[in-house]
Image 1 (cartoon, rainbow, N blue to C red):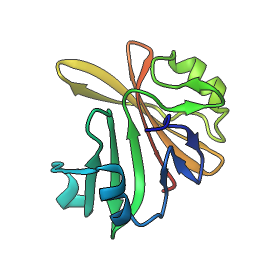
Image 2 (image 1 turned 120 degrees about the vertical axis):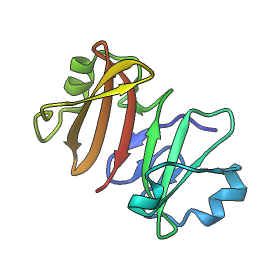
Image 3 (image 1 turned 90 degrees about the vertical axis):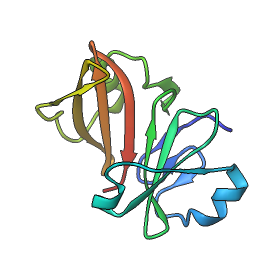
Image 4 (image 1 turned 135 degrees about the vertical axis):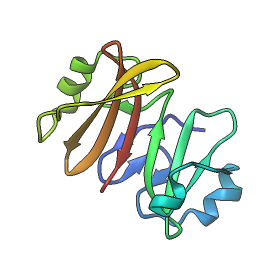
Length: 138
């Protein structure tokens, strides 16, 4: 699998926003994951074995990609960088929102929504470091 490179409004790695996911299931070996909120939002979630990513689809098309291990932008991996460094690198068109605090595995993570080049990026931050980047166009 190639590096997960973020291209705002286009996609992440080989996953293009708006692309039909069906051909990619066999081609890339995607596995469907049952997610708690899929029934609420109408999404289907997929992953790739041995990769720490989730690909979300709605009506058979890719709508969002969550990266937990690597998400490259302008030659830097956003995962593992200090939040302030990521904000500087992304140069968002809006200031990061007041974060939501979410508890995961007994650890608090701060969730920020930002916009770059009209694309949405949600950054999950633990102890000042980005641990997850969820990228979409909506």
